Image 1: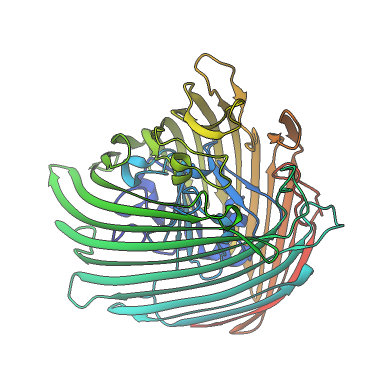
Image 2: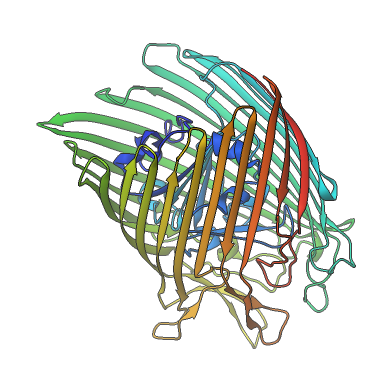
Length: 624
């Protein structure tokens, strides 16, 4: 997908932003999808270190972390499961095949990012498996945007330190951009209540992007990313299997590369053609102190080709897109803890055919229809569909609506088990499927933007855990019941003064799980019914200000330390942050930050503590 995430990073009104709700970039005003774009100005103004910090400020998303910085972080879009969010970084599919196909959001830092996009609702007709709940796309800055160097250093509470360098050299004919960053945090005692050891975190991330336009209307490019993430955490007692203050640690290393070539760069070109390929390799090493426990390795290789045709019939503009894609994955595990008894080496593959038709009917109506056929070699094939439309009632007011389907293929863990040997997996489980509807209204004026959307998603064939009381073996199965996630989102932005932006949102979510047909429906865990966000950034002369607050309502969780496991209610909380910077010279800014301003004691996951108030200070250098 050559142009899938070649975005224009612009701090402007939503109608001017080029987005990725299609196989080809389009403007926000022309899409019926529910999308949030976090631009470079917001990322810089808030100064938050982790991508999950930004996602907390997005309507429709719930973030749950199992402790401090670097602990497992799960993102759920509109009540979907954690492995139902598809992650792209610079166009590379980044869900981890060595970790249950989840996106490893805890390993993602904001340094070097120029843009974050969130597309809510089932998107599998465009992007395939894991896009069942939605898509999160991260993008580094465009290397064609000139020459610039940005360097940042920061130090703060609990041994926190981070530093980064981002540089780009380019013209409209070609360029190269690179980023390198380091983050360290001594952390907190996430389980022992302050009496045990502190669970720290360390992250090294680097990326490189090169683009060349040797001809008048062609482009070739390559992008790569490497992440090494080391996190300490408290696991379970090996005898009782209860939560305990342990010396567990995990190292995740992920390297990925993507290359593309395209002819036809302008959106008015009558046709365009592209080819692309990408490769990702991930390894996860788990230890308890100096003792190696297990290791998993995953590989993903994907190639594709895309053809675009554009034509006019009267006043109607048509864009026809066809794509073919091949993906092969492998998974290996080594369980030093059990002497190799549960070692495994697995492979699987799929071929996908995608078609999309976008129609622009004058200045009033935009329609978008897509269909995708995924042919799997390990389980049943799947066809997904998406159709939506946006109607402009006035130049400022529009209504939109759509229908989408999503799938999530079984993970290697679901099919074949994982450590320990008592979890055996089930090779007969099949794809999870979702269908969703949404409808909404948008109002856009020069100084403000408002949006309201209602949604209703249904999940079937959900893959759930099972336990055999006779053999004491755990496995997986497809639920016979259907789960429902419905609600509405309100969001808006106001720009009352030059340099000042204020964003706010509210989300209502009713997420219920039904594992057995005609059985009882239970509220889904770690999904608040009510959520709200408020953020602002302001630049006045040499001073820059950024502040944000997110409200997370009460939500259910399951306490597995109790026997039998019990449902518990987690308290609601408000998490606030602020940043102030002062430009002491044209290229030098000194800044200070505070996270968790109210020193709130909260839990996203039952039994795991989170950091209190933390204070930071640093310097940023920028040369253009």
